[in-house]
Image 1 (cartoon, rainbow, N blue to C red):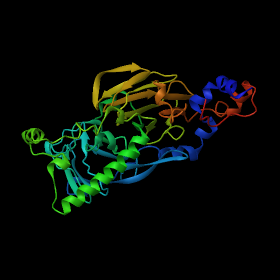
Image 2: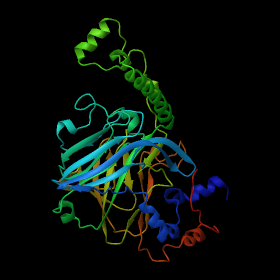
Image 3: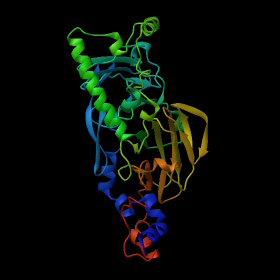
Image 4: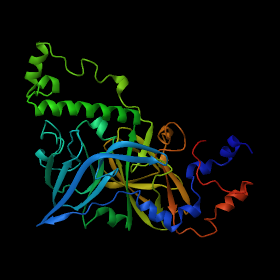
Length: 396
């Protein structure tokens, strides 16, 4: 059997790519926890929950053998998960350890407008070495996320996003679909060449701007920052050319993603979803990137129970859903079909690593209580006339 025929015969291998005995091993399940967002524990200041976030440049390994320099909250991609109860008083102390400007936008939360994190609309950007304190009451209930709102096109695909879950003891989803376990999956897309070039360019620009500001040579036109639209119009009439006129951001320079991640990892480093027979699990899906994803689960239907954190009055049963940029969707998967099943993007371009399939946002739903005979990878190998069962296939 030649290489091409082998992969045609073994399509299941490229869909799952990890043998059951490996997936069910205790060390694999323990390692899998590290592929899920870590929860950030707060300090208490009276009745206020205080969280500390910082941003720095970080080396993020997407897959074995490929690491890129990116931006990250608390040296992890995605940033740590913030979990609070509905109505909690929250304070987030945000420190900027980079030479770039940043803010935090609380996507989906009803914060005071001065806490919304949009630069030059409701706050100044947090500059190098500075910190800003965000304070708000956790509302509304549901699955939300936070992300940088400065240089958003670069900073979000560079890792500056994290989940924010607002819980309620009187959880309507729990009442309808009792569950004990849940998973948070944050999706993103990355043009690694764009990230590298833009980070280098922005760092050079910020060094220049910092030098000019320290020496009292701040120039509104050079910085492209004006106090009003009228001031900008007047400057243009006097000959000023805004950045968009001088082709600083031409369409050809927009990112074209070639890597796709779940929780900051691409297949085969993506997390697994573990389930038991007759168990319900809740999966919180967050699109922190710029691409649409069409997520499909093999062997099951699931229930969409929340949209942008809001419980649906009538859950929808489906096996594929559309996760648009900025959306959060919650689903319930019922353990009704024992096995190891693919959960992947049906836009197969996004199941690639730098153009090679399989990769990207491919992961598995794994029944951890499978009988030993079903979990034996040798059984499938024998049926196919093979002496062994491949563990990982990286290029079909």
